[in-house]
Image (cartoon, helix red, strand yellow):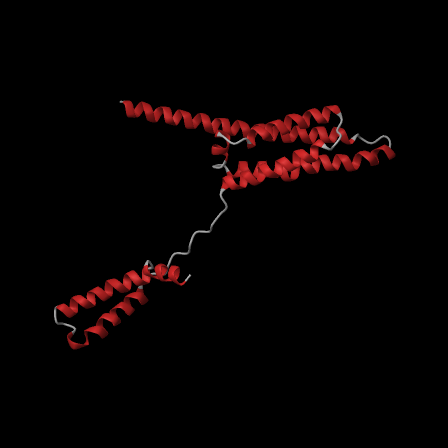
Length: 200
């Protein structure tokens, strides 16, 4: 800890400015301008340089690695799939949920999609929200309200709401996938142009 502080100070602007001024003091000593008080001159110039040095830049915040975030979302998605396997859904809603989970699986699959996705914080957030909030809330709401609607006939069936919610979530995931495909196509076009320019 003390060693890292010491090396940190050695690389600091205060030390660099102080050392430059101290070297100027040594030059004054060798040209006989400082006289017998040369140690005071060198130390004084070092201190003056350290005082007038610009302040240190604050360190950049250490944000989490997007690929690590995706690993966490994958782990949460595995837990979500285990939960969904225990839930009984009507055939139509179950079909929509299967389509959605297949698309989310493809988006979270390691490979070229991940490489593009880590450069899109909005996409990572959208996937995270779908896995951790939107899908589980939609299914859980259906499970809780299904029983109550049997007691109150004439209300709109909760499976219709679930189908609509899953359809909207699927459309959102499709838009994300389309955006990633477009980004990959642009990247390939850019690489092709680069190779063409290089070959000329």
